[in-house]
Image 1 (cartoon, rainbow, N blue to C red):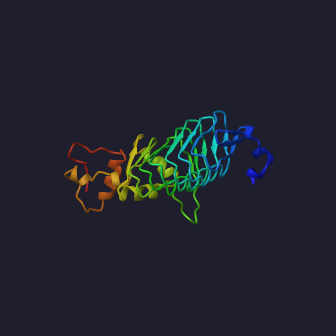
Image 2: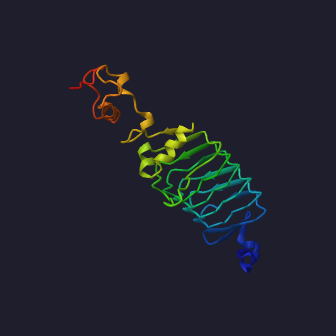
Image 3: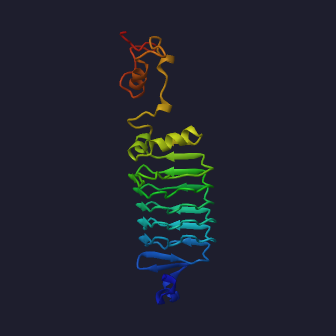
Length: 239
């Protein structure tokens, strides 16, 4: 293992509990409590701080572009994670089972979120997802959970609901909402209005009657902005 090498045995290669090779953090001390990654570091290696039972605090500078797979996996005592803008990739299982983090902000600039990267963070109450997110890795045979917590209360999406659809997690988000998790879409719904947010046009227009064959089509057209009705209380149906 890395710890058994002459390089690791040289104290000069360690900075505040972290072992660095060039611009990569390759390992954190097994006894580490607080980890502030050195500014200028570009990569946090896979499993660099996995299963560090005493680790409570992590701060990652914007110079870091990639957080490796399993980087902070199963850090049960981890309470505070500060991620700065500049990070592009968060690897699979990166923070999975970090069970003491209550609030996490994924900064703007992050484009890739690995499979189960934020899964089973069971103390997590508040999560912020950036508008910059372009891909969430998913196993088609074994659907993963991009983020999950038994205590999750609020997810703030700086993008739109349409972004969630494009990421392939529309059903996941809709299920969360049906179970009482509040989602705030800072950018609105985009070009897709979710079914749970659609207004019932039979309560708006006198000439739209619930249960009629056209009702769903009128709801869709109105809620997606294709038509707003002939008057305030008449849709203008020609039935």
